[in-house]
Length: 85
Image (tube, rainbow, N blue to C red; front, side, top):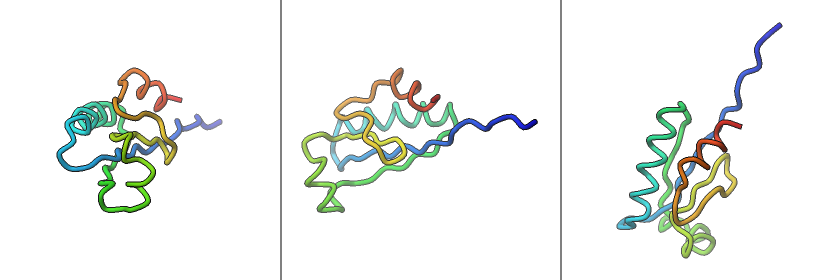
């Protein structure tokens, strides 16, 4: 009998240069992702017209597996819970 492997998640942080809330979100995501071994990436919304239209007023936006999880602030406890499921 094999032990089921835990789900693998991927975090995406949507932000833009010069955004202090993005800096805060980046720090939380880097810490949590590092501790849990979850890969993450950052995407600059100014490089995509679609991202700008959809997320401009909500950045930073956190996506987990491509699905919006948080915006404006990253709640560390909530992020950990989502990644543990």
